[in-house]
Length: 248
Image (tube, rainbow, N blue to C red):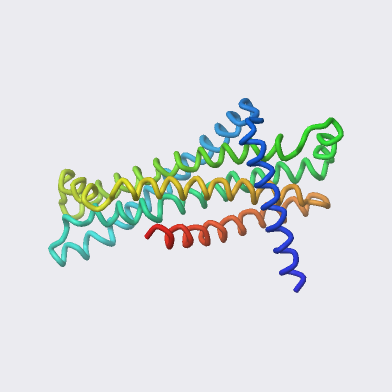
């Protein structure tokens, strides 16, 4: 019962933080410099991990599908199946998980440390709203960078699948790309981007709220970081199901 109460209170605080953040954004009260800094930190730090992860996922999918489709004489469908799975599900979800593990954890640890060292209280004393100063730039950065990482992830995964399909079952590049164009619609790409925006925003809200809720010392900061990653991944999968159900 206590755990349910804590979760309910946390969801409520996250919702209030989101509403306050959107209020500042719609009023144009955005620190461009801080937002640009967060974009660089979020994007550059996550790009390499996303590329490596999605590259191996594309290779794995191609390895699985190439042999099975070869038995059926349907090698020309390999590209379409890889691209469809990547664009609709794997690229946005995997990219968001990478962002939650690297960026979300870092945000939570940074803000948690500020809370423990009373820097958050100092901001309030100087008349600086912590939500505007901390959450607005991070929410904007995560919501903008996650879709860009998702595009890179989808491209790398499809490219890796194309290269391995050529090597393993000799599917020509033109046939592979033709299959991709046949299966993947523009609508699928827009939904992929929409998912990535929602996932990025959710990660920023969860990480910041968790950091602001830190009350004790260094151990609490570590617990907040772990909580951020776990709750972010759970939220990503839940939101992915909801969005997929809405559009597909």
